[in-house]
Image 1 (cartoon, rainbow, N blue to C red):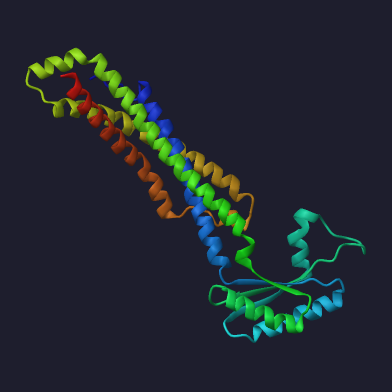
Image 2: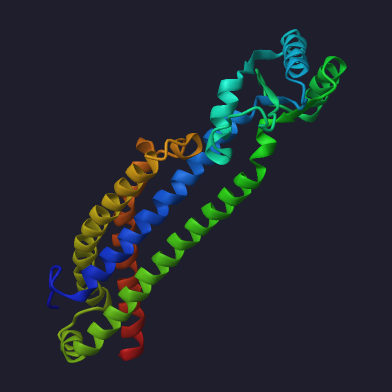
Length: 284
């Protein structure tokens, strides 16, 4: 069989499939890291909001709530968020707040527990806090991001579905290429059969040819995909957002991405072999 070595369309089709698979897999891994790191960071977090218009009373209740929580068992750290920190947090949404008529913002107390927050612990904290700070609201930090986690889960499944679809598309492209090659080389195959060649030997020739094409295309696709992933990673890192930064890929993720072209070569060779063997059984 003539082998183009990146001269024909097949290697480039495989390169495109591998590049898209690398990008989709990287997105799925980054989302998984984001969800895992965010869940770990927020599992023991509790936030107390003191919603009170009077600044002096608001600060008094925040300090009282912090003292009560600090005395409770299982509490690792209690931090009253300063007014300057709160202003900085809301500035991207509300802008710089100046003047005497500005809307008052709640006082915040950040609480870290040694163990994950459950309903019993949250209820105990609420009971203690409300006895000294009637205007306080106590929430588990993980509950705020539940809609975000659900969206991330959906995107992870979407990334996994894209990887599966791209794998199926690669197999379909190989199948069509092999069938076309079988039709072109039909007379040669019949001569080889008359000379004693077996179906397995003929399938091995096609399998080897597709393997070379898939290896070359996979290497090119991996390079293109990694360039795209690194470029996107650099763009997202410029956002300087904690939730985005927590999705950075680690060494194991990069290893998984490097295995994608190998999986593509194996899939292409297996598809080629099965296609040839089934076609030869019907042909002869």
